[in-house]
Image (cartoon, rainbow, N blue to C red; front, top):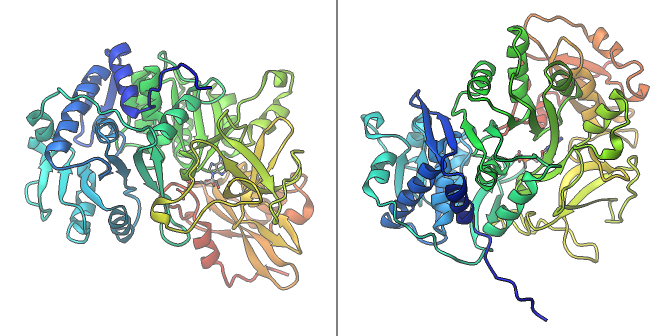
Length: 545
Ligand code: ADP
């Protein structure tokens, strides 16, 4: 028997309508590439998004067309999030940190029709403009007085001219909620990049889940500053979440250094933020060096790679900022698990509590997880046994865009699960802990050594800025761990001191065999350590006997 309830499709435009009607005077503050601090309201956002939707239609963008962006976090990028998806086209956020050849490959693969870009990326756009096959127009996200004087870019338009030339009257079309809304490619560390094509439905459901108290815990009383870029996995959904709850939004533009971020946190009264560990490292270093505090910040989400326990200690114990450790992937929109404690954990002592928070966390309703052995058999949820982490749910991809990279799902006699490529344990309370990427596991004498634990210990040493642990060939044990370390500026530590630092902190046979000091650890386009590059650098490294 069918129920008698309304069928209202879950569309991204409804988030904007809600924000305009219920939080129309709420502020959106943006540090812009042009150098100013810009302020507008959700009412302005909605009006400008409708003007831009008219501009897209007038410039020949049709339902399902891909509209690309190369842009920082800012109000114009936010307007495009709603104008493009809301009008039924697909917002394709390109990652400007990728190599230009990769940007061209991705834009061609996506068949982007138009490219919107921040002025910072003018040199990149000039480098690719004559190479991309399908882009018909380029839009500089600025006003007429900041338009580049001479440019080799064909059909170059001005964002604010488009806004001024079009009416704010536009009715968002209503269509099937399974329609594609946005597209984001993985960084392609192995093979070609692969596209995750999100739907309106998956995005709205993901937004509900991220707002929950055991997730990001957001409300209209929050001031949110997304450090995590809008050019990768939709800034973890924060541009949608902010409209859903009516929070004040603060966009940092290109200024992601510790000093700029801290100033903005303080002057705008930021209560909540989110980003990868490498960004927070810069912020903490600035705050420590200048003896500063956080006067309004209550919590920050840290994910994308493991949050080192030493970072959690600094935020929570020294600065009183709660850390929400989160795990996710491009293929999961991205949120998959969050390290929020339960009521029953109130009695834990500080060390036990921190150990639990250091895990990647529990999945919210909507993400189903299990760990499996190499035959797909489910492994126990005992917090000890580790296996490949599999997920499924309404905001997990079922296929890559255009089938690039084959069918991602694994079938073990049941419906498909997405194999994450992460190796993890799950405990009886549902807390998942990643021990490694499956390709980063160090295989020593038939046993696995998880590189993340080894890195966390090294990062707790006061002289260490960043540490990566990789497997290096060994004649007897196949592989043994090599610790690659970048020291903090001006700090000194020896190989022997670092190796002795492992005593009593880990099983003796897990201790790295050697330490290699480097100036810096290579980072990828999404701020993760490029371990495959390190493995290449140290391919012929001879470990001491
Ligand atoms: P890409 O860099 O290719 O875009 P994603 O951004 O989707 O990839 O990264 C997903 C991967 O990042 C996960 O599979 C996992 O290995 C790693 N990751 C994400 N969050 C965490 C975390 N909190 N702790 C450890 N690893 C994490």
